Image (cartoon, rainbow, N blue to C red; front, side, top):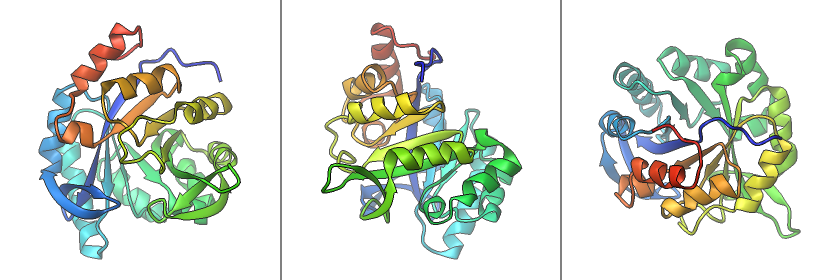
Length: 256
């Protein structure tokens, strides 16, 4: 793929449980870090290009709360936002898109039934479909797609699965290296460089951001189209403006 000249995107990620933004490790030790609407509005004002909201509620009532929340977000926030978590059918996707989400993200359900990608893209268009891939390095040195929070390795090889997702109608790939997620030692740039070279759709880098330089590096060396991060923004390690100013200083195109 020829490297895109479009502006690189900075995307804060907000995990939501029962209507509140939470943060933990592998969904354990969760603590509230703020109201998702207010936090999203703050990030939008700070220059975020998009937002990602992930529903980690396990109950039916939690799903209803999240759908109501999506409507509130759509009413308040003027930048695009993606929602994911537990979307396993066209009806799930429709409910959230109809509530005001700009895109939906599918992961485990798409691995279990790849036709889901085509169904959503067929009804709404590829630009509405993000396929999230949690990848782990297997014992034989191959990157494999994983499910269950990255704990269960599937038989889907990362690059083949990403290519299939694109062919089925995915508009973007959101890739997380589970080896790097939460470690905050930077993204695996070689992995992203290979993936972006094999796809013609945008790739979002996720997992590993510990500082501004990590994000700048995944743009420069990994050729990622966007970078997703959570903790560094939630806990004030840096701001979105910090990242954009550092990127601009390195001649990386970003929206200011």
